[in-house]
Image (cartoon, rainbow, N blue to C red; front, side):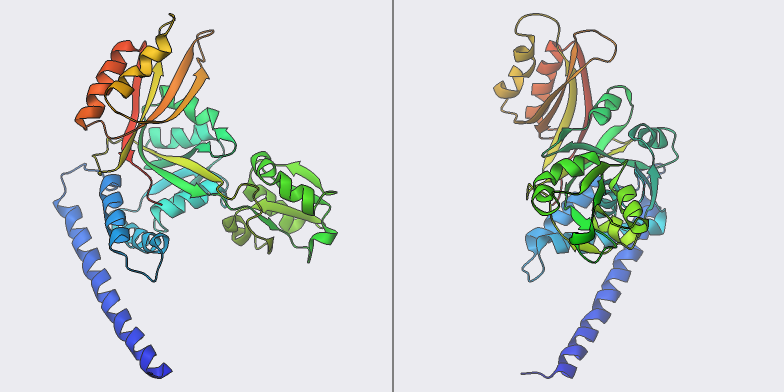
Length: 355
């Protein structure tokens, strides 16, 4: 068996090779930026998704596919920053799950701009202050985010990518144990997602809803006898020790985010398309609206209805389907859906999330 010093020499040699190859990649990426057509988007979600999927498919271990994706996202992120650092707007403050999801998708190189409302996140990109927006769309236990759906009706922004973010709730406190905790701060959704755990382990503690999980962590950092339920990024941001990890009642609690921008995205080989539709007011209109999807063999993965903000008793339907608008099957189905719709909008055609 080799001794420790020999193994460390091997690691040092490999590290030298890794650095050399990463530097070569960065130089080529910078050259690509010079060759691109003027005005071409720096961020290409379909290209990034294809790279990450290829690396995961080639992964023989011992690193997990998730670890491989994180490593290569960071490489891609820093290579893009050589040409131009991105500005990413998200629902703040810093340390929220939206912030963590944005960092997961874009890596650490961009500038992340916290916004107080989802409306302001949209506005930052519409005005050109930020390059892209990250907004929550749906949580697996709490349902759709109404404001995101409502704004997408009138906004010119397009969905460029999606992020599936596993929500891991943690109890954090400056108190040494849960025995001295009398109040728990968190966002209302997080309190709902951990209600069972709280009932079992902190039945007598008051539950106080605040504007965000990051705000909850901030309050717990300065208020005796309290705790917060939040993500790991918030614990790090406000230096609050985590007492219990992964306390969410549903082990598969996941929030889906949209990445919004101004560009159309090419096909990646595994894509989704998001639509907003409205049906004329006649019997069977909703059935007629989605029947072409079945006829053309297009799978619908989500359906949500929202009342029209300006027309009484009329509704918009938000659909996600599998496939890209450039696929012949999808294009034929959407042409027939459009013919049945009183309102029809393609919000975006984009790569399915790389987990």
